[in-house]
Image (cartoon, rainbow, N blue to C red; front, side, top):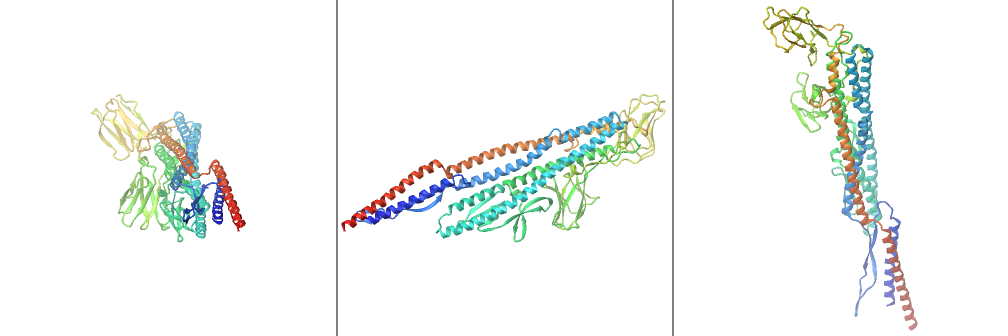
Length: 639
């Protein structure tokens, strides 16, 4: 009996000791990140059968288990990876919002000053200081375009840097997870399968950190190790083995870094659409959805402004009596050859219609049978089996492919407007070369007896200008008057006789259109002559000024300033939406973490109560041992 009581006391003492140690361990790690409360699991020993029934033989510790809920942990990881994605996306787009919305440094004030300077030239076409102010305002506008583009390029470089740094951290964490997997395998094997709780906590914390960087899935194996998958199921950690990620230039656009899985010495590019979570997922989404579009929108405004301004400027005459030249340098589309293309392959691309330009990029490919031009934003495409040429271009949204030199399965990325703001420039430095005047002047002969009047006239567009534009024309009404007139001069279709007169109708010759109004009399003469010495003429600069309010963009639905306003509004709305969504997701994450803490966290008050309870159990077991010794001594005295 004495020994049986002694054994029972010892088992109780050992059990209470384990509970005290585990409670002390909980208290010590109450503030340790990722620590989950532990609990000793007790079971009764097998009872001893006697004639009087089964007599208990004490207690033993089965295991020490972590108190946690796997469902809550998985839920928290998913919420956290989305929260980090939204946070990083918001942090990036906030930079653009601050840049575009700034009242003094945005594009709108500079654009307004440019057109105000043009209006000043319209008021004072011969004043050199007004012309100089117009050139200075144009230079300021170009500088603002370039400054905004440079800032966005810096943001793009920052995205690349963050991708590179994130990949380094992911590889480091993956290696640590694999090492802990190996330690757990050894520890649990040596302990007969008992869980290595603290190592498991360490591994969970590493996976938690990994999910902040990229969307992560985990699968637990029978041997206790955890396999980690990223993206759309690409293995990153398998047991104690790891694969690594690498930041590589995007094959179709080397200016952007993307992510590849390194396998067998090869880089397997991960589709960016499958990387939807974590910091890296957020910045990839920002770049593809917001940054590329914003830079294209700004570039489209610059390209279209330069082209439409040039077209009108070339229809006027400068102070030297020469027709206007290109006022701005119009940026060309950016064409990028895929890294897998042959180095000699090339593609020639132009813009045939600036008014229908979109903000999308385009992909041009050749599969051996068809040449295909695809709008990247929605994958709409057109194809032809004939190699595009100047005579037979392949055109989509105003983008024309006019020459190709490529092999089968090669491709090019076409970015029509992305460099627009970067490469726009002022092409004129001499104030006398501003074409403010109209090229021709119209007159009614002093001897006319009718009431007919002739308008100032305008140059027909589009370019090129008719080579006979400034050839003199004479319009003579028949005598006796029969409602007809003759046009004489040099040019296509001249002389033109017996033209029927209609009050106010367009009369067009040599690329010049004018109207005669009223009632001309027999023999009345009207002339169109070169506008020599037209320094006070402001007809063309008025048309240049009118471009400010002309719906030039979005298929004729937006002005330059309204298009920029739409960009500012779009960025502002997206920023606000991300801010609200990010805060909501952060609150959801806080709730998930609170739920985890309610299950797995250490409650110091509870642990303090456990200390007293287990102390009393320890003392009671000690008393049992003391009684066992007393009983044993009594038996010895009887003997």
